[in-house]
Amino acid sequence: MKREYCGVFGIYNHEEAARLTYFGLYAQQHRGQESAGIVTWDGTKLREERGMGLVPDVFNEEHLSRELKGNIGMGHVRYSTTGGSRLRNAQPFMVQYKDLELAIAHNGNLVNTMELRAKLEERGSIFQTTIDSEVIVHLIVQNLRTMPLEEAVLAACKEAQGSYSLLLMVNNKLIAVRDPLGIRPLVLGRLGESHVIASETCAFDLLEAELVRNIEPGEMLVIDGNSMESYKMDVEVEKKRHCIFELVYFSRPDSLVFGENVYTCRKEMGRQLALESHVDADFVMPFPDSGIYCAVGYAQESGLPYEHAMIRNHYVGRTFIQPSQSMRDFSTRVKINPVKSLIEGKRIVIVDDSVVRGTTIRSRVKKLRELGAKEIHFRVSCPPIKFPCYYGINFSSKGELIAANNSIKEIEDYIGLDSLHYLTIEGLLKSVSSPDDYCLACFNGDYAIPCPGGNCGSCSC
Image 1 (tube, rainbow, N blue to C red):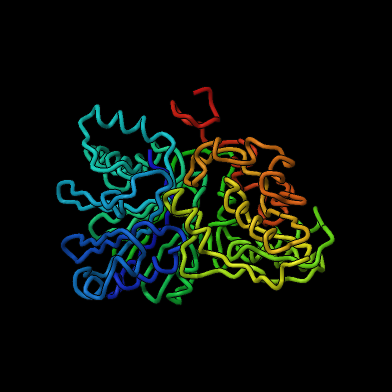
Image 2 (image 1 turned 30 degrees about the vertical axis):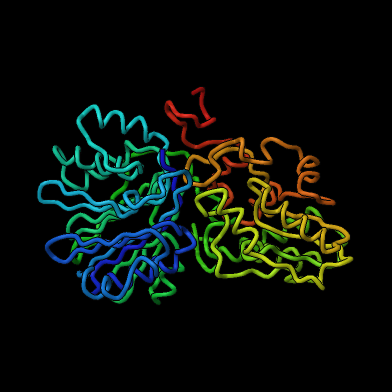
C-alpha cells in the first residue's frame, strides 16, 4: 500500500496556467522531491507532462509554452515513503470515462486502500498503478454510472477512509476536496480573476496571489466557468484532526498552515523547550534548516548565545524525504559541515525538530565529540515519536522509531549525549492557537481513524 507525502497546486482561468502551476509546485518542492506532474485543459482535452525528479528537471520551456496549453492547470509533487518510486506512480493520474477526461492529484494516505481495491477488482476494475489515488478514481467512475459528477465525487470520498487533500480536473471543472478530519492542509486563493488552490500558502506568496481561506474539512469546492460552488460531505466527526507534524517539520516556515503561522509556532516550540529544560551551556545551535526556528526560540527564552556551528550545503536535498536508507546515509555525510573553531571545549545545546530513527543525530554528535565538544545536550521540539503514522508520514513501522523501543537514558547513550529532553505534549499544544484541533497519534497512539483489516495499531487487526 502506498503512503505518500505530497504537494498539490491548481489554477483556474489564467492564460499562463501551466507556467503558474510550475511555480506553484516549485514553491512546494519541499513536500516532494521524487516526481512532478502538470495537467492542463486546452478546451477540448487534457494535456499532461510528468517525470521523475525535481520540478525544474521535469519541465522545460517547451512544455510550459507549447505542450501544456490551456487556462486551467493542476500539478503535483510527490514523495513516496515506501517503494513504488517509478514514473507510472507519478501524479496527476489521468483516466478517460465516456466523454469525461479526469485527472487527480492527492496529498495523503488512505487506510482502507487494500479493502477498496479488492472490492473494485471484484467488480472488474483494472489498476494501472499501486497508488491509493487510483482507488478514488475508480470509485468516482463507478459512481458516475448512476450519479452526476459532484455526487459521484462526494460518494467516493465518503467511502475512502484516511487523509486526503485532493485536486480533480474533470474536463473544464476544477474540484478540490479535503477529508472530514482536515488532516492535510488545503487553501484557496485568488490571483486577479483566477482561483488558485494549494497545499501551502507559500505557493501563493511566490505568485503574489491573495489567500482567501482554508478549504474546510469535509468540504468540496467545484469551480466551473464563472461559478464556484461549495458542498459539504455528509460525514459526522467529533473534531478536527490536523496533522501537527505539518507545523513541527513539513511545512515551509513562511506558510500559513491550518491558520497558524508556521514560523511563529516553531519559535514557540523552542521557547517552551527552554522553559521545560534549561541547561547551563556556552551556546545554542540548530541542525539546519529544520531546527533553526525552534533554536531561535530556545536561545531567546534561555538567554544563551545562538550560533550556527553547523553549516548546511543547500544543494543537498532533505535527508528525511529521500526514498531509500542508503541515500539518507549519504546525504547525512555531505549535507552539514561543522565550524570547527566554535566547538572545541564548548558546552553545546543542540535544538532540532524531531528524532525518528536516531541515526542522523548519532553521526553528527559523534563528529562534534571528535572535534572536542565538552558537553552535548540535545533538545527536541516535539514529543517522542512512538507510534507509526498511517495518514501519510514516513514512519510506518514501529520498529523504526527509536523512542518506541528505548528509554530516554538508552537514547542518550545510543546517540552519545550528556542530556536529552523532548518537548512534552502539553508544551507542544501551548505552541499552537487551537490545541484541540490536532492529531497527536504519532506521540500518544490515539488514532482518529481505525484501520479496517490492516495493521494500524488502533484496532484488533
